[in-house]
Image 1: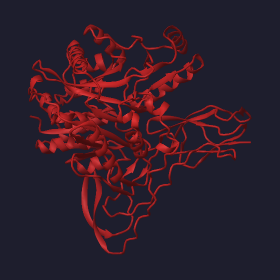
Image 2 (image 1 turned 60 degrees about the vertical axis):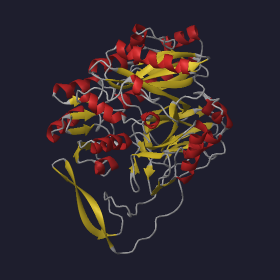
Image 3 (image 1 turned 135 degrees about the vertical axis):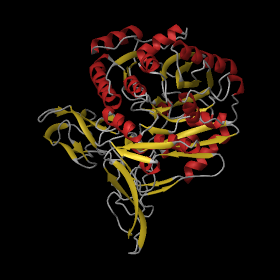
Amino acid sequence: MLKKILIANRGEIAVRVMRTCREMGIATVAVYSDVDRDAFHVRYADEAYSIGGQTAAESYLNQDRIIEVITRSGADGVHPGYGFYSENADFARAVTAMGVAWIGPPPEAIEDMGDKISARKAAARGDVESVPGTTKPVQNAQEVIEFGEAYGWPITIKAAYGGGGRGMKVVNAPDEAAEALESAGREALAYFGRSEAYLEKYLTSPRHIEIQIMADTHGNVVWLGERDCSVQRRHQKLIEESPAADLSEETRTAMGEAAVKVAKATGYVNAGTIEMLYQDGEFYFLEMNTRLQVEHCVTELVTSLDLVAEQIRIASGLPLSFTQDEIVRTGHAIECRINAENSAKGFLPSPGTIHDLHIPSGPGVRWDGGYERGDTVSQYYDNLVGKLIVWAPDRDRARLRMLRALSEFEIDGLHTTIPAQKLVLEHPEFAANQHSTRWLEEKVDLSGLTSSAGSSAPADGDSSLMARDVPVEVDGRLFAVKVWLPEAPVAGVSAKKSSKPKPAAAGSGGAGGNGTITAPMQGTIVKVLVEVGQEVAAGDSLLVLEAMKMENHINAEQSGKIKELRVEAGKTVSAGDILIIIE
């Protein structure tokens, strides 16, 4: 069994892996950027090492620095979590070349399945039908147009090395092709380090159903069950559940057997997810995620299995602790991804500091979080604060339990997706399982949503002393030193009763009727689409702002002429900064 595992990730998933390691008696190693010096995953780990930088490219995607820390720490295993290196064959190969266990599939399987194009070919080898699409990277906008004309609009541009909706753009007409292809490439490059993309037919009202598989090095490949991930915005999942409602046992078994075929066709090992689209009684292979999924928790609750523990067993050379016949699925589980987004403003990213946090509890409630009170959700990384998961004997009781848990959830200092999730769970169509991947954005009225940022101010403390864990970095390794300090804000210091400044709530941006375009959130300008003197109409896109690895178009709210440009590509802006003035 492995003795010390480095988690090449951050946030919620890093803490999730560390918790299982602690239960198994395995030491953990965290890595952190300059921004994350006092992050929750750093505080939780047994050891923590600096890799420098701010952005993902400068820090967590700096392979050389990660490799250095593996050597320095003496880790004998590396868990990539999801995102970053989880589907990076080159990094997996570099780790295994060091004689260190890679807690994931072999590099060859990542190349075969992590590349969504070759994954479609592997599915074909397993005799599993895919969504109609291309099997080579798209080179230019003309290819996008030709595909759309051949298969009918809309179509989808998808990052070949991506997932989670990053680098995915829906193209509704030929005149959108060039910009969509460019935008998909930028997002994919920023998040996954590769910009290649391919094309797929965009199904009109499918359900997104995925199968969890596990495979060991002893030839055992099993499917654990399915998850319905159809509630999405921006092609990213918002609510997931298991099992999928109103799915016949015959279809469920056929999906599971198809998933096993795909895994065997590529010699797959460790945890993986076969994603499928289900419509009109038919299912199609969509892609395979060669990693642990964000939503693995709902599978854990209905099977009573620890998937991270199984991953570690497999990487240690041990067989799975169960067989296909021994898997028992009981009850129903629902997961809500609590993201730092303003539901009332079109799910705009909402980075900021968590001033106060109250986590719900009670029967059947689980919280997998990456932040605590006083922590900051940075603009440089993913906006997932944590995952709220519930279990109950059946779907409706699970739905009501989640509503109860969400009503208890209190977070002050940033906006979250909770208002939208409450609206979905209360919606009669969701309760009746009459939703699809396009349902939330096309059929649900979100106009009545209000902010969930909270408004209470921090309580004024007295001058008494209190214990604080002060992070001290020595030769690139982090140590926590307890000191007694006055109860007042101290930069970079973590304390449960610390008083940190409350960030301004994210604004809506736009002109606000007076021609002044302001930044709705903190982020980086990636593209300016207009120039001084240009005439624009209300609704025209003016620039592209990237925050939390998502591109957001800032539009004009009135017609007029561009009088002044105060930003350029590459500039970082804060919420409320003036970007453009229209006269």
